Image (cartoon, rainbow, N blue to C red):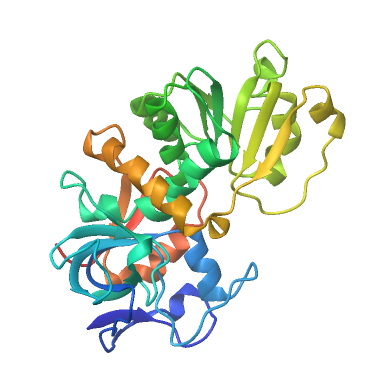
Length: 320
């Protein structure tokens, strides 16, 4: 089979398409013919050995993917050959024609969702769901800021919050991003590149019950001032340190919580998957695919996923 591999930690330019043996599955596993592989920033950290991530070599990138089950381990009962699925935490790497995954990390893919869209679900939608409902305990009627709403996780958070009946304010950094968020149905769109863009919300009367934060090192100090009483900031992304005044938390009885998908155990992942399925089937959730790549363009995808100004998901299309 064709697969993308890298032989040691290195830049995206070292990724190459090679002929590799098809994975052999073990107990509890599935073999999947990959339709599409998702591209997430974490894939680049694993490839380069940064941010405390490690890989074994040769390494095939890709945690997320979607495709068709072609082989099922004898002890697996919840899936059968021919099922359409999406998965995360891929065992062998999803940037290949075939990949192995744990059945407990795989979920049914509704017929109305393409493989390209399905490849967007694993990390982005699970992370957004965990942040909103598992960590910030979002409820209908609350006011939420999706601070950085145009990336893969941001769009997922916007769609999930709207589906749950929250009042959604979302931020973008460009005109194109603002138009995308308006098209998603956000109640209010603001530009986070404008100075004092949070000033109108930095009072208890107009503050947010929840802030979903994608870049805490730049925004957390101002986020805290924009919380309502009892509000919560859920930190999904961060690239450095930040100085805050704890009195901003004390004055509001507020909280800051971290969100790391690696900490989510299997029962919680299954619960999230079951929650997503009817929302996907009904069209309330529709992943936005910004750009697709071929296998031999994976290096370019790894560079693009780290660029500012994200407008949806990046996906490698492998098979129809």
